[in-house]
Image (cartoon, rainbow, N blue to C red; front, side, top):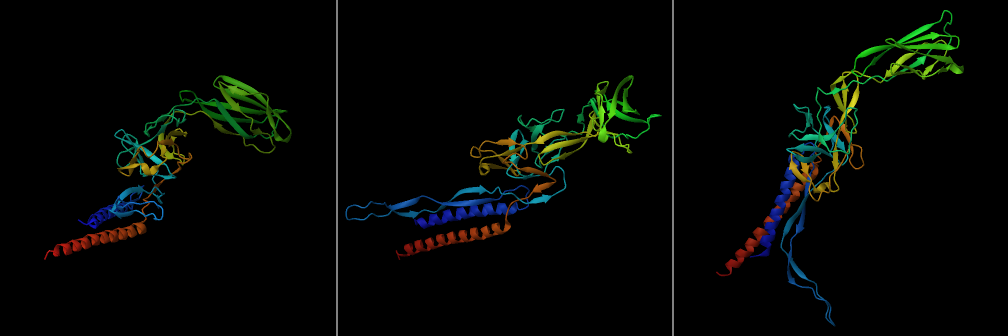
Length: 393
């Protein structure tokens, strides 16, 4: 049989594969996080009809003579170029700007994906549309995340509580008027709400009384009282005679000033809080999941893990816009958004498919014409065989 018949058959098979790959790209033109694939061809082994020879004496050398036996698909590679951004407004829709991958777990298998359409399930876990659980690092009770530990599923339970924190410091700042009356002495009072270790509220009262040299200060907490003086200095400065503390709570007055004609002293803050229940959460560009609690506290709950690979093209598609690691992808490198080589996160947006329709339609034409040309090889070879059969007549 003619070698051209088998060359034509190999060409038909190869271009059919190209059509399959191109068709799949076009079908996924609107699939979030999809990465287009391309087909590479390679010629097959060639039949040697004459070997090469070296020059000898007065005889020149000769080149090898080979006849090709067709084409084969060398590989199907994935293009991991960044897709365009589509704003959705959903807080749990995430887009990676960079080379990283989200890490999910499904049925105990670790998967990697660029599709960031996550939503909470009945258990409060952030999951992909096919049920993959988004992986990351959970924070401890103080909101500290250990990114060096193992990853686990991110769970955002509405019953999550932040524990109460006892107040240890109170800060007052603003101005006490230096021209206030001394006789009878001008007075000023500020009440500060503080908390004990169980989250119970109580009030500390801070009284200010004008003196000839500045102000007398008395802090009262229940039956306990502590006193200091604020000495008026040049240029509106007030110098405390010492630290002011009552029942284990430090009252900071170092930011108070003493200019004339203005009274603006106010409580600027205290570091205690009652227990609080999770009300809402946001996701930052660094992948931190920040919870807002009923007591006004904002605290990190978890941090989303991102993965990177030395050779992303070595990943194996596992369906659901996900990939699994292979031996040729290189070891998985876990990190957080913003780490070198991983990229940053954008909440409220999705990465769309990177399929270029103009290129894919061109590839369709190329594959069709290639298939057509190889079909002509077969019909022409058939005609030659028919002529050979007719020699017997």
